[in-house]
Length: 389
Image 1: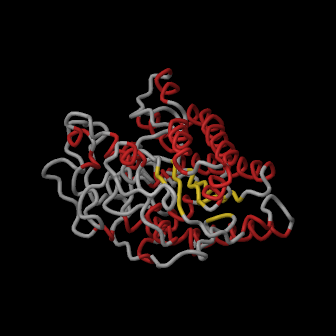
Image 2: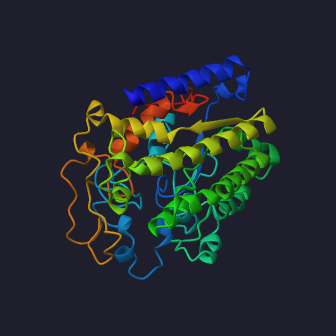
């Protein structure tokens, strides 16, 4: 099977890299006990910043789908601002570590979350729709950006939070050094926004170095203040994305791979992920005592699309569990609108609302990160975890 070959190639590259004494040092596989998570990103990791950030907006629930059921129905039984029916990859990481689910920064900042412990708990800065680049970049190009909670804004939130963590440099060093930093997934919307407006892949490729520079800059700043372990995810295989399969539908069968995904979009993502991985290798050389882990979301997700029944998924990728607005018909009902009913069993689907995935899919991707060859170097959470997924 093609996906099986991909896994073995990934493993072979890892073995060759280690045998050659390459960019991954022995310190990269250290067994630090991570006590908390600090997370940056977009809707793939947003655990409620969309909810709390929109609380002052009039009729927010009418314009933001994730504020309504059936979002959140599977695990939380109510909407939490997560863009799925339940838990996200970051939630499964927290569960694997044996720590509470990571609370959203805007809920803490507003005072609506009152039980946050700055010493014991981390913070999630990820916001749905966020980009790596500032929104002004897209405005200048006439491209719609849904908000300006860019990576630099999220990083500013984190820096503003530091004084509340400790009043001493040694205390802050201890807290940050024993924390896991999840830097992404971020950057996907830098490509999603122009793709939705039918910008060409040739044009969007020009954004890749800019996006990676923003991520690299954020990593450097986090390391400067004391981060010791950072997990940096690549992008998902957007060529398998339900909405893109509708937007770019073609009768040319050669445009699709064996899983029914669009080759051109996945090829672009592979290009981006390769460039990101190369930059992480460069950063490893600059920071040899810091552990920088690449999380291969792309291949961890791709095996679900290529062999869904092996993972208990019975519905094809050509359908989503919960309907989403047709991009060519914005007046259409969408997931989260009154009267829109999701499928009976979301666990049988990979797509949730067309843009995002189901809890079941995120769980399987997370398991691939913990148990499979989809982190480089290995993400070892065995030191502290109290529960299994």
